[in-house]
Length: 295
Image 1 (cartoon, helix red, strand yellow):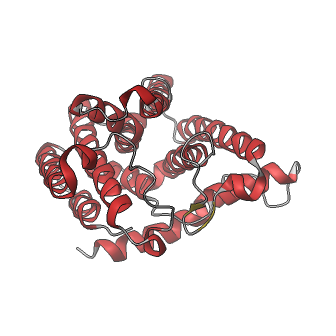
Image 2: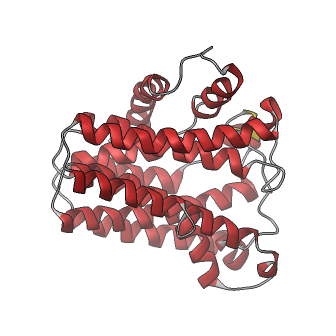
């Protein structure tokens, strides 16, 4: 499978969809809506919404039915990037090859834009459920899963532990896995499961695709940590060497050891696909892409 070509095609389609569900350019209040569109439409791999669509297809449903939810997942991801880049977090100046949101619009507007993206995401999931006639129970489950992935049991909790200075210099694999499972893998999991949840797929298969996504997300984050050490800034599109004082798999095991761990997580992810469905080609391709990527 030409996974690079597929990703490029899917990204092109998603760019239009992502713009469609945001406030129009120039809509009042103008500045916040400009910041929203800058945050969400500034390029990127769009891996999480592509994962949502591919997982839905693997579960036997039409991925076009959950386009809005796929966009919602990307809005959540973009929200997290805006917050990660703030001076109080990673203090990054570049994201996706251009100035970070707070460098363009100021810190206050960046925070408001992140808040608004998150609210747009929850609205879109609810709208999606209504549009496809999903049961109230299914919509509630999808919204609950997304909330859990974002909040203090998910991305926010992982970020707090990552920020905790008391962990600097410690060698604790359990803490690293806690951080990365929540900061990164949690959104991969909800992306993979959201289509099946809204469309009432068989729960055992939804659970399998969720386990696949958890392993995929952990491998993805390990490769991200490796790229922070030895990537090309112009290719990666963001500031590098921002994680050198953080507790990461690379800090614990070195680059070579971290690569072996990433390979192990990918192997586990691929095993999970044996119990998902027949059309898992794209999910297999995403696993290869996450392991081999250079940006």
